[in-house]
Image (cartoon, rainbow, N blue to C red):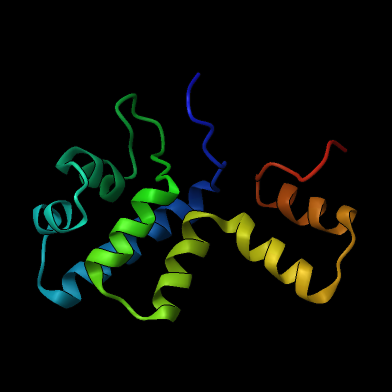
Length: 122
């Protein structure tokens, strides 16, 4: 059975790719360096940075890849959270909901508005 990926908003994935590129540029590094340092294939990094998978669809990194990239880049806690929230926008919505005490319906509306899978069926 295939691995189920969280559904990411296409806008957030583009921002995620841009943000990774920004970190690489700031460090004067390239995709090959990131692939080697993160122990991720060059193909994966290329797909991530180009935001396209082998079928031409938007690329959705998994948690392990995002963690490996964060470790390789040695970025700050705030920068890590930013990358995670860009890669997995549902986390930002859910964390805020838990802090503020939103209802399930409120969370479902916010997730649906971003084209993300809702917590429960409407």
